[in-house]
Image 1 (cartoon, rainbow, N blue to C red):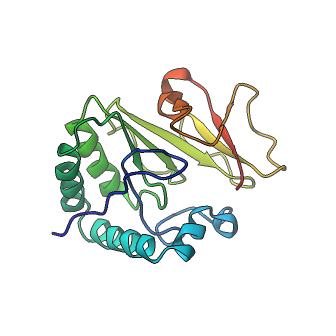
Image 2: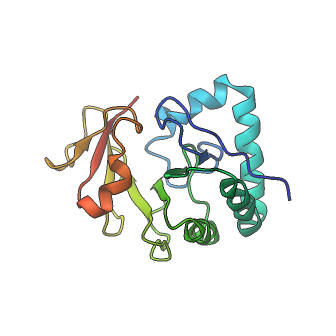
Length: 193
């Protein structure tokens, strides 16, 4: 199998390895956010990004366990690996996809993994303790996620954001709090951009 394309980072997540899939197509439960999807800008603007994300989508749709093994092999070659971001674009496709990422995280117990997801119906109990699952909540989206931290999106209409929620400053390298949300027992909110 060909390797999943890892990104070395971007302006928001910093120098954090991450894997992305196709926005909207690989995002279940996106009816509330598809018209304002932040990842569509990169999808439209960068042909190499489109190619990489399409390649990843094909591999994960074909065999998520074989695809994740290529991620594990690539991550093993990195010297220092404090953080990995799962899906800057895209989302978990199904339960096998979740379980494949759980296996990956188990291989790197000293690395913190982070995934935002709108796939609230999947079982994340399989994830080891070094994975932070944060349930995305867009305006108009019912809050039917299991217990756990939420990532609220504020477009000026969202009224459900708790007072204790952390406002995203816009750079994971400067903050990094989302990797700690389950431990902190707090939510985060982002201004829709």
